[in-house]
Amino acid sequence: MTATARWQEWAGFALGLWLAVSPWLAGYADNAPATANAAFVGLTLALASHFEASFDEVAGEWLNLAAGLWLLGAPFVIGFIGSTAAAANCLTVGACVTALAASALHLDKEIGRLFG
Figure (cartoon, rainbow, N blue to C red):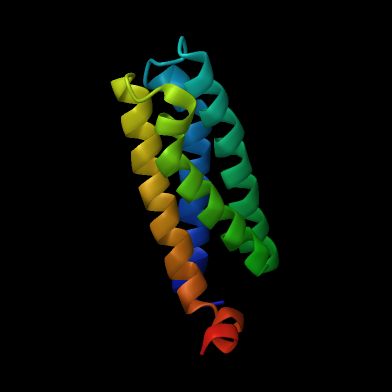
């Protein structure tokens, strides 16, 4: 694992923690679907990123990629697109997590052997 990819995992960890507590810090905790989504996906992201950074497992990045893609669609699927703070937070974190996971997967030597 490259130093850049390791940095990406810790950035994903921080984004997961932010997402998990963001309903209360960003003021949308009264929106139950958005809060449940943020808490569950945020904790999952943080755990997957920690797992990936600590044990150098590629599976964590795939989970992060899936979670990032879910976050990009969640406001539309779950129906909280009308809540500006919740939707903007979810979409922003989703875009960042997706980009970080895709970049880390691209840099991973094991993945390179599969696709290269």
